[in-house]
Length: 243
Picture 1: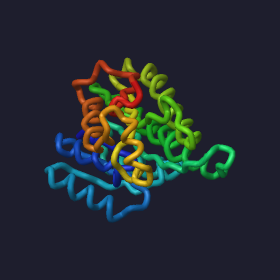
Picture 2 (picture 1 turned 180 degrees about the horizontal axis):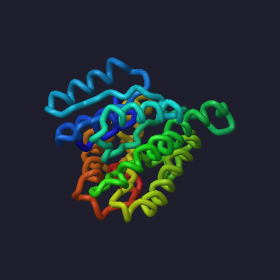
Picture 3 (picture 1 turned 90 degrees about the vertical axis):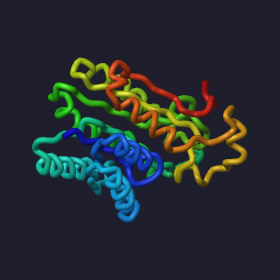
Picture 4 (picture 1 turned 30 degrees about the horizontal axis):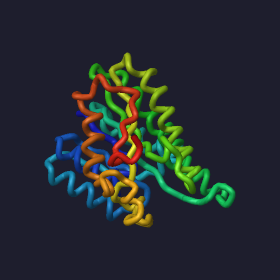
């Protein structure tokens, strides 16, 4: 059985992606770090779509924790594999760089960029061994494309994800594995709830923030067989903000 693994799947964009995958009949592994109640809710909603849903509580910024969680999952699923991976986990710790504590710099990079390495390197071998390969979508950001003031740590992380996506796509294309990145602009989620929405949406040609479900639709398309000839791409979804 082919499973999808979504890191940071208990909230925001990760939640929407898990639910969209379940709608399409794909069994989902919902990774999360601490929000037990939120993760259980996502699991229940996925199961209501008639698919298997499993929780994987694990800090993806910790290599040992990732190895242990994925080794355990593989032992419990000897005939299954993770065919779809969404590296979505991430946090924001915004500040001007000259005022930014070192722990905030490292926390943002570790939670998103390091986690991409820890999770992907464990999942890739099984994908590459299978005839039909697999699909990876890495969540980048508008911030990684143009840089945003007050987000040097976040922008560095997301730009790094874009570079990693382009390099990895070339490494694994011959094994029928696609690797793409999605770069959202301003999306309604807990990551943007503290922003000045009314002011910022005036900068967006569409005059609104995007919806998590719109991002989820794009991610699921890139994971699907319909996108098997698309790899190494960064697809923006930002209402025309950065064109």
